[in-house]
Length: 95
Image (cartoon, rainbow, N blue to C red):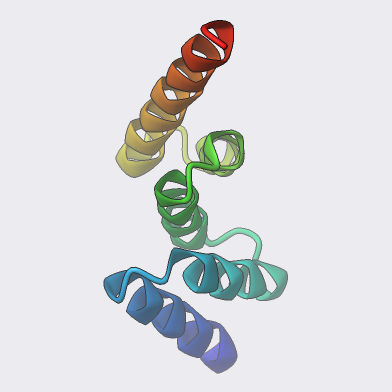
C-alpha cells in the first residue's frame, strides 16, 4: 500500500507540473497494485483528456462508473471525453 501511495503522489506531482504522459504512467502503475481505487482512474482520465486521448479517458471513466455509479468526477470527465470525440469526428468529416 505504501508503494501505491508513493506512485499516486508522484503522479499527482507530474500533473501539477503539466507532465501528463508521465503522470498517466504513474497512475497506470498504481492500477497494477490496486485496480479498485477509483481516484487513479479519474486522475488518469484527466491526463488522457489533456493529451487528447478521448477514447482512453472515456474507458477509464466507464470503469469507475461500474464500481461507483455516482462518481461525479467520472461523469464530468466522461462528458469531456465525449465532447472531445465529437469535435474530432466533426474535424475528420471536414477533411
